[in-house]
Length: 295
Picture 1: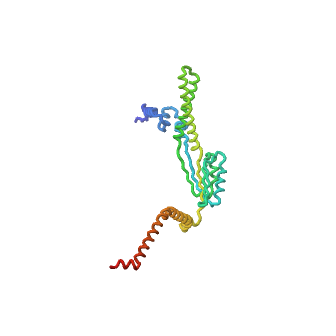
Picture 2: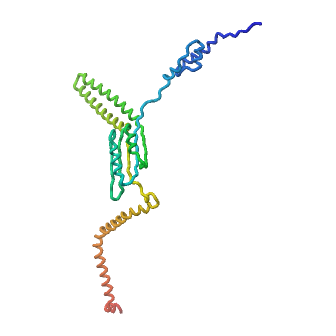
Picture 3: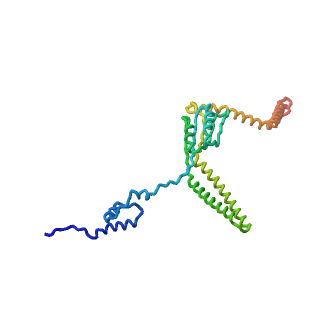
């Protein structure tokens, strides 16, 4: 009996070699486990996958986003406290903050109300808004608008205009020749500088929108029981009755003033006609005039 020996065929290296060829054709990612095994079988050291992975993985998009944020707050508090709260909030706007609009409305025919519009930097906004926050805030709305494309476009145009301006300055300083060419270069430099100033102003406006928070605050009197319950129609009617009476009296006075000229002209004519008719009737009622009318 012959002993059977298990031998490895000489073509056993073919499969690992094919795997290595396929791996070389696709080098977009780290070596797979099959490729590592194939390289190990061929005697080649396996690549350091743990060290290569961070360099191959794409970093997340870290481009900044520019958002314009606007907040709308409504305060409802007693009418006597509106002015003091409005002034206190204005005093809070000091560091990296500017008051854009402020108004206090007082009238004998309407309740006291106020409004405030401020712009505050994002670093200071949290402290300022926290100081303004109170239980009297009955409404709060936040609006955000993406200004990234506008900012990127303006910055790119600013960069190009700056480079063009610098080249024109160098050209103007080193260029000789005819006076006509020099004047054309100066005019072009002035035009580019004007566009650059306009772009800089536009970028500053975008910075105010994206790097700061715009807050609109309205201060309203707190509704009373009659304004929030079933007696509200009666309260509104009582408050409007005086105005309705004044409007009715004004309409009557206006009609009298408009009709007065016609009354001056018509009343004498009507009076004379009425007197004539009465004379005619009295004349017909006399005995002599009646006897003459009978045959």
